[in-house]
Amino acid sequence: MRPFANQADPNVAFVKTLQDTDHIIISVQYGGIKQTTTRKQDEKIQRCLQRLQNSLQDKIRKAIKGNKLKLSPSDDSITSKGIQLRLVDSNDQQVDGNRRNMDVWNSHHRLYINHTPYNIILNPPQILTMSLPLILMTHNTIYPQIQLEFCRIQQCQFTWYRSHPNTSHDPTCHQWIEVGHEYCYKPTSKDIDCYLKVRCKLPLQSVNEAIAISQRPVAIGPQCQYLQQRFNSTKKMTAKKEIRTVSYNILGESYAGSKYAKQLYRYCSDDVLDINYRQQLLVTELVNYNADLICLQEVSQQTFDHRLSYGLHFNGYQGLWKHRAFDDRDDGLAIFYNQSKFQLISQHNLDLNTSIQKDSHQKSLFNLIRHQHQLLQDVLTRSNVLQVAIFKWKGYDDRLICLANTHLYFRPTAELVRLVQIQAIINHLSFISANSQGLPIILCGDFNSQPSSNAYQLVTTGKSQYTVEDKTLNSSSNKCAIKLQFAHQLTFDALSGILNSTHYTPKFSGTIDYIFGRRGYFKVEKVIPPRKSDDINSNFRLPTSAFPSDHFAIICDISLVHNNSR
Image 1 (cartoon, rainbow, N blue to C red):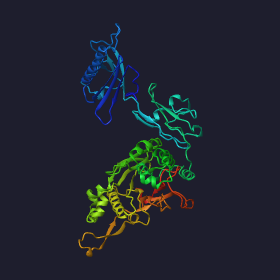
Image 2 (cartoon, rainbow, N blue to C red):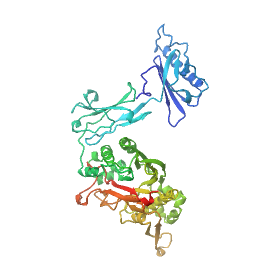
Image 3 (cartoon, rainbow, N blue to C red):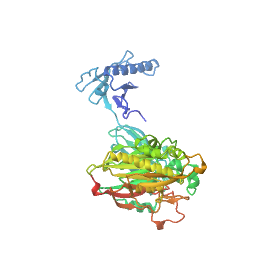
Image 4 (spheres, rainbow, N blue to C red):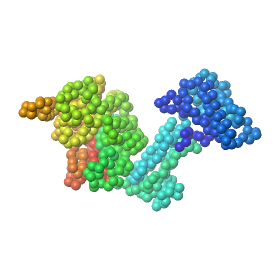
């Protein structure tokens, strides 16, 4: 990819401001010689032009010396004697040499190299990269993975093509048929066994474009009657004063690719477990839910950046990602929110283990467990995190709403660890809500806790008790059981209800995923059940070729209770 969008035009000087730095890049071409220079934005233009002039002159002299640049006798623009650069304004008056780079490199000015004028283009649109997903399937919309600078996808021109079926694997041998003109493309039965190509042209640029060709032909995509039924239930967008919330553990690739998972999901082929296959199903599923707020668990940064964000951004969502604490696995939490309904105000994420040790509002919790040495070690060595975002609800008195997303420790025998994590989470949310009176809070996630668990009890009742063996005494004869009391004032209701089951594997099925809402603040308008109980038999298990995760997405439409709407 060329460094600047219109590099083919020799009489244009390209100037690019580097994001998050105080530098600019200037690129010119003179007599077939290209020169690119990086300078500070606050540098005086006189010094900048002198350095650019010297660098360009050195290149010209080396080219002449090496007989790489041939001059005609009549050519007075390029000489071995030297060149001169000057910058003039719209009145053809030379710009004051004491002015700064940041103020003078713009389209109203013109650069001269000797007698040759150069128009200045500031921050030209540029395509950095563009590619297509590895696996393409019918019934699943394709969103090219494209990185742009200084322009938006909506400003670009896209053209889609398909090859003739059963043609060579060599892209240069394909004969292409034009099939579409949008950013995204949904393959049909006509595209099966065909390769796809997409061309992107930048706005108002005729010479710069990018082309991406699929690595594999289009395959037949699975169709799932159950998912289609859910899509029919979520086809209609929510009303202005309602929120459709989704919580979904998408089965991260670091887990699906493990030896344990391959044994657990032995009924699935490697192709079905491949994230490149499942990403198409995930994006299709999430887009069709028409949610306002989405909380995802087991999301790698690669999946967030390159597999989910393109499709969701194009459909009006903005995303946030939080990495697990001190964990080598590429795994974390993600929130996507509908930008037409919500505006991000602030984030209050935390690593649970660090918060328990250091935050003042966790002091009582730390004191409760500090003498339980094994428990303390188990809690502080866990990498679980909490993702918290506060939004302004547009069009609803611009009131604030808090969304929290988490994924608790998974081992079935670690109920006490999850109790501590829940207490830490609610302590943190209580601390946030204390600074914003009457703050509605939605808490979503994979809690790895069934409705009969102590963790669920603590969330919904505000208290729970757990009995452990007191190991602080040296004499075994004096050992006794002690009761750890957990409590808080910020109680929640399970807005998603107690569903039949949210997680299916050969070893376990049960409800462990929830959407909780601060008690007294929300009214449930509708819950979209994962699956009817009579549709499930003892052989039912996830994932499948049509369903990309071992969890169901939890979906409910909610509204604020009138008494707490201010």
